[in-house]
Length: 323
Image 1 (tube, rainbow, N blue to C red):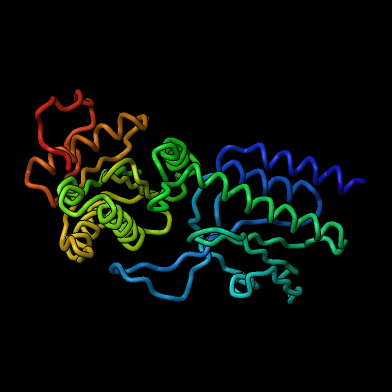
Image 2: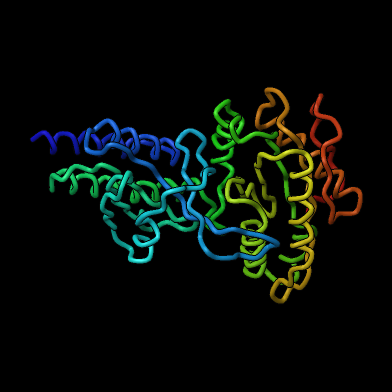
């Protein structure tokens, strides 16, 4: 009866979460405090990206339940890739100072893939069954939540997920990542002409491929959003030079890409740093002003916000086109 009541309580705790970050945190807390395991972590499987090209082998990162991102490379990969390749839990015996563990793939996820790793799991068959049940429940709930947090066309995070991601990356806990927090607003130049000339279906194909270029160009721990229409957003922690280089590299990647039927397109970028206690809407406005400058100066360029002391009023009607 102990295990039944425990799993009922755990099920209620997981199904009552409204966002993926809280869901992951609750899962780890439940497993850690249950006494079933000595250690529980979530891992993400990423691939190195360099020069816009994806290169194997996959890289395992520790998913931080405080930051909402994976940022530490995993030193002990035992059983993880095997469970991903087989699509089933993989048990690994203890070896020397390394404890026994079981790696459980979280089903139904797009990239990055997630794996739950449990060390010191009780040998009690009932406990093992309950742990597998929690992992399955977590995967199901994560799929439901990500359907709300992600854009249906591109799979990127959506506008609703922005505030929480911003607060995570701006938090004191994110200080261990170092560097500044930057927000970049990306807008496909003359996108309205694409829809008018080729139709909305091909326009959607452009948006989808644009999102894939973003995923190949930016790092695994940068947060990527479709903010609305042809406007996208990136949150990243980097120094000033790193942010500039990353955004310029992305601009060049878009310029050099041949979109099906449409051909070559360009992107304008405005970006700003989250100085002090800048609120998310204010930082978006500041980056938007830099984007406005990029459009006004001829498009296909990256512009950093000149000053972040004052957020100017919204652009007057009749200003430069933002498409």
